[in-house]
Image 1 (cartoon, rainbow, N blue to C red):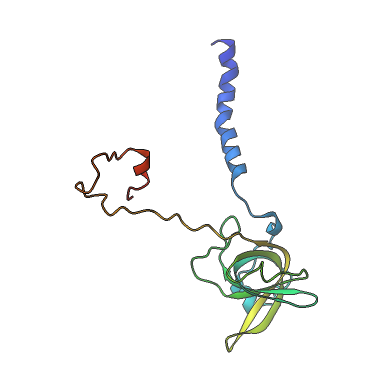
Image 2 (image 1 turned 180 degrees about the vertical axis):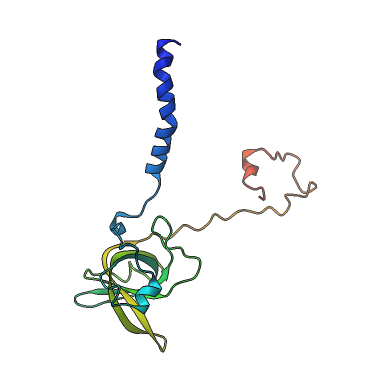
Length: 190
């Protein structure tokens, strides 16, 4: 082996390792605002609702869809329909909800920014249960004192595909039609 090859072989062995490391670093993580250490193990929504005093002060990361915001002189309260969180901390819009909870924070939250239906993630300490109304039903809301909030941008709508009803009819195609021409490629039905 030449001297040059002896230098390249160890570097070639490191290439997959470096590529894997770069891939892991580039993956999306939990937003910094809600990336707080959690209790071990963090209580589930049902446990916090059933035994609020037992789990008071434990740190959780929950998220969901905003129902509404109420601002008082010294605090803001956000009512949230809970949803399971994805790996990146974003609430999963599909699926069932474990229930509703309240986020309490000392900062002012503008109701025009924190609109109903937007996704939110909170990291904070459990602070008991408050009873509120959902319609005429008395509902026990677990309360999370926020240490960090992250309001998610709405996801973009899926692309609308154009459907050509005459795609499969050879008699309706113009004589100059070329299926591989760039103009026609995006008109194909998939």
